[in-house]
Image 1 (spheres, rainbow, N blue to C red):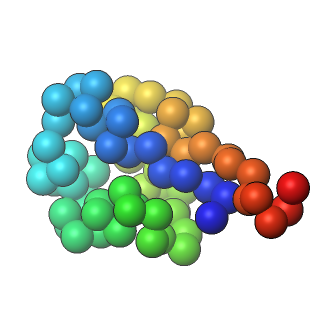
Image 2 (image 1 turned 135 degrees about the vertical axis):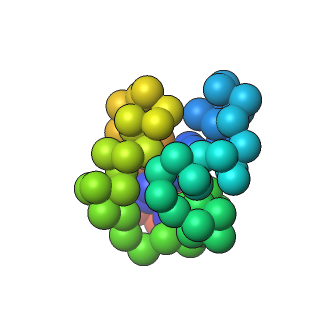
Length: 72
């Protein structure tokens, strides 16, 4: 996977639980887990915006591009 989701890092920095984050963003905890574990195939911009608003961060703090070893 070339895109790595760093929600767990941002949650840890803020000492925020997944449940609290999910409630503030308007997602279910299960959907947050899908995002955190890298199993999501897509993220709506409105969801990304809500996550950034709640965590007071930039999209680049939540998503990171990592080169696949196969592509190297």
